[in-house]
Length: 115
Image (cartoon, rainbow, N blue to C red; front, side):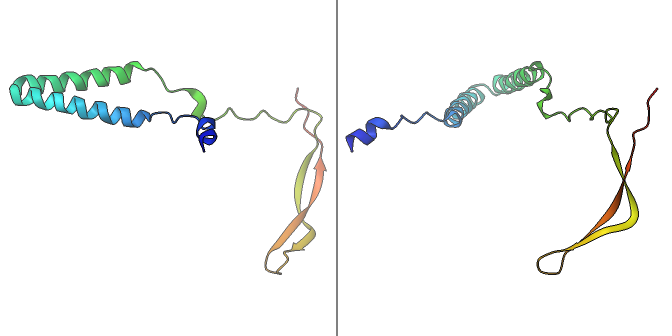
């Protein structure tokens, strides 16, 4: 039992718990200021809000990691394209006989020459 406790890594303290403690302590300090001097309390709340807004605006733009990727390039020369026709090549039925996949006949088309 002692060996198992030695092998386990100690749990890291939660950042969210620390934030909650700071919010409660900060809220208590603001409440004490408001009780002592209401005008100073209102000024303190406005100052804290302005500082939070300034900090959020100063952080900068959002990273491009969530941006949509650039469009794919046009197929390079020399590739063969397939065009679908109205003719049916084959029909595949699912194992239960409910699903039906119709495969059209494909015609290979050479790429257009780009000047």
